[in-house]
Image: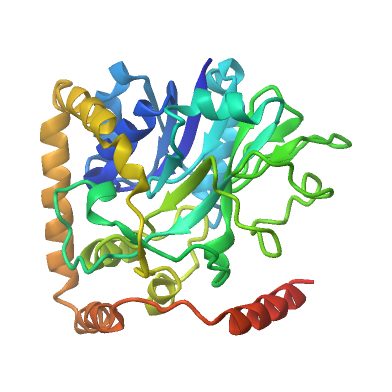
Length: 342
């Protein structure tokens, strides 16, 4: 079985090897990765990783257009997509977390049977008190997250999708694949249960509001802030799909939950570290990774020459951790949010 991971990347050098190693360890067989405007050697690293099943393509988009959507459209026509059995589109701050006793994606797919698409529910992980970009593993450094049942903000209930390549779909999407006209797809949640009627046709639905938390088989660990230093660098880099979206204190507050410990992904670390060692042993890869680390530290030092950036960095530290809202407040906010979106 061939499982294809598609992603659009830019300046992800410090974290890239672990992300690839983790997903190789759980059964991803092919990687179709697009980059644009890299300055830290991410594109060079991906080329060096070709022996590990990584296909790298340079990606550009017309001015004002999304580089991520440009990549996804190109991916749909690529031979790797045509050869795949299953496809997922996730970012390099998202790690699939399979529940025990599942050992790999094949086990997950066996558990969901005839499904065409599997919801991978987000769980937001915070900075865990980490100020600086460290040369450690994301899955070991950031172990505190939003509590179970966190329904607000919106990001706490969003998801990505693992879907059947030969299913009733016509295009890869950022959160969910686009359905063929007039078709119907069998969707299951992260516990393997059927999604409610109408979900398949509701392509604009990107959040799981109103549905029970379902992660008995899988959740998607979303490390969207990492350390405060990493967050400042992410802010400077921008988002691949929403170039105009501000990465600011609001973004930090809405994602930096450190309420409870979640180390469930740790059982995969031995396999991840084994894959990581194999990747780092490929010619030039370890050196490119070290250079990327140095590049990011230097970029942060330059940012800190700006008074406004120093003030924001300080505010991130002052904001510390976001506190989950009471259930009654969440319920009211969710109602208002859904009403405001029709």
